[in-house]
Image 1 (cartoon, rainbow, N blue to C red):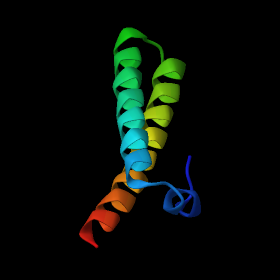
Image 2 (image 1 turned 180 degrees about the vertical axis):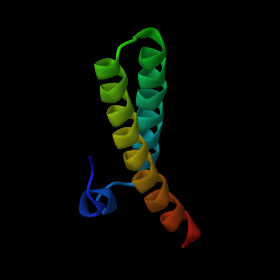
Image 3 (image 1 turned 45 degrees about the vertical axis):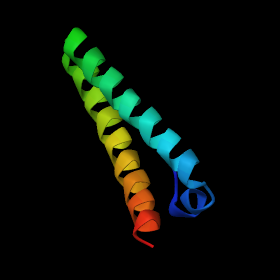
Length: 69
């Protein structure tokens, strides 16, 4: 997961690329969660989706802050 310092080092196009990657990761995780069953798999996928969602939120906030300048 990125920290705020490393996000500030990225260019706007790099941020956009990372946002696209994270969104695709979330999409894939949701598809995997739908395909697998079992409490352990569901919990692991839920944790991974939450982690990627946090990453997406950080990236979009950084992008939006830059675009607002």
